[in-house]
Length: 391
View 1 (cartoon, rainbow, N blue to C red):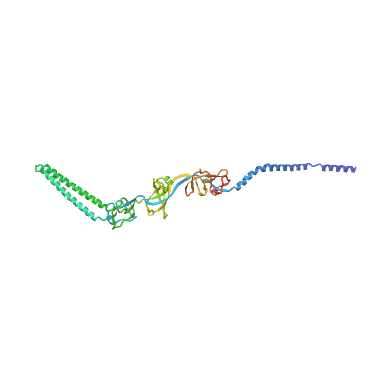
View 2 (cartoon, rainbow, N blue to C red):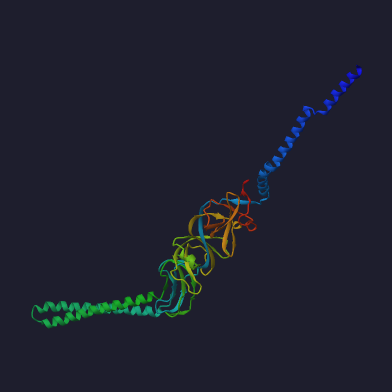
């Protein structure tokens, strides 16, 4: 009986050990599910994230460039020129009369003179005697005329009594008229002589500044002696600025200018008062005349430079570092919304202290690469960073 009981117990044990338990099946199922999910993730999830990761890596490798949005501002068009300083109205003064021996020179270069002022005197001793002779001849003519008038008056009283005929009255009237005419002739001759004598003095035709003096006391001068003095009317000066044909065409009368003489640290304000209507066919240049007020630093014949404000326009302004050029012309690189670089052809204008004006090609709202544009290629992806900011 004990034998049978032990046999039954052992049989039950063997049966339980040969059959798998429920817990073990659960573990196996969980492991299998994990393997399936891992495979799905590697097949789909990781593949979907790969492009994004690649894009992120690409952006992290893109070069950083400094950009700026230039906007638009008023740019003054300044034309630089050089030229010669001269008197605005130069008056050459010489001998107006018959000339003679210069007795005195009364002015020096740099002297301010008034209109009609005597600059030099010429000996007039002979002419003075001639004038005295003519003055005496006037007195003789007047005496003859007075006598003729008296005789005519007496004859008119006698004609009423019948002692003198009317023919005698007519002769005496003619004698009186001839005497009066001789008086007028003598007076005219004296006036002419005095006018000639007054022209012996060399006078200034207008007020101004004496520039040169080419006569000395003791010198014999005549109408063929040439220019003895040069006078700047009113002391006004000007710069004869030479401009290219294109600059001259755009130069308005009244344009403001700043003139700096060579060797002088001082600048002077002026204004274009005349633009030459003629272009030199050899140099293709013309002259803009810039009026200047008198100053001792402005010496006629001297050389000077000028900056002329020829107008203004509203345009974007970029630094020189942002502008590139090649055989196709000038251009800049702009950065679009996708952070890709694009080439933009431009036309440059006036160079100012702030930069170079762009007359065509930009609206002013673009992100323009300021530096290192020569190392970029169109279509390249970059990381833009605003100038003066963090991006």
